[in-house]
Length: 381
Image 1 (cartoon, rainbow, N blue to C red):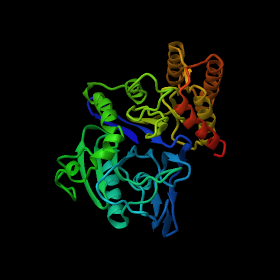
Image 2: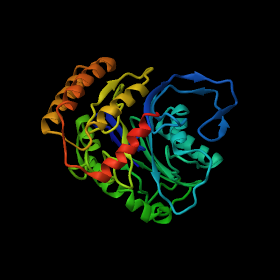
Image 3: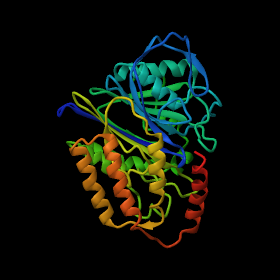
């Protein structure tokens, strides 16, 4: 379950890509930089299958579940940004093939602009098909949609096995539902894609229709700032998300029978430069966005540490003062462009202080029971 935002603002010469990655709560998602490389090997092992390797791949910065080869979202050295979404279709999903996250990484590694990335993904899909379990601690199969963009162009690509349709847009948001009704005529399937392939029942229970209605409001704004995007990525459908799960919140909280957890959040600003902002941790509502450079970085240990801190907020009464102070600290970190390592130290002091102040909420037994199990499993990560 995820939500992705793309906005091309040619008038103000500033484009935005943003995504919340919703995965299993214990699935560590690290931010990883992979440099520009030349390859001698003819074959490449991705998550489940082997494909043909290319001679040269771009430098990329990705958010990657640590047990998979592919990526949930990312950007390459040319400013190409891609994020994928699980979509629920009427067909049977294959047990092996390229998973959507493989296609995200391959698109970033092998393209210099958004149209090239679109073509790369389509060609790989046609050649190898899609399939494979994408669940960290349970079986989870699905087809995929993609938001692919650079500074000047944006494409939404939706897939159904080897079938696909796309639309070129100036701005769009996607979620775990199909949205293409009138595809571009170059599409392999140029009928009403949503009507033809979408499984309405699974789509409904994914909460994606409600989440997308929230992200779509961003598209009505004349000028979008990163704070506007952060507010949407932190938004909730109710005010009890620290004691109840919420599958229909953009900032998704685990705790119900159905639903995942926002395990990573990324915002990319494309101007003359590539500006990258990440939480590097779960739950944007509790986390602080930090600017990171487009170079080597490893956040696995940081993710685990922050995850344990975030879980201390569950089933607690969190006062408005916490959010107000967090907002001020985030603004200082971003405005002063404080380096990532120093920002982590400032964060750590902030969370340590507040964790010791929190008071318990009334007991929500089923919610706490589900989280107790996850806490035990997290110790094995």
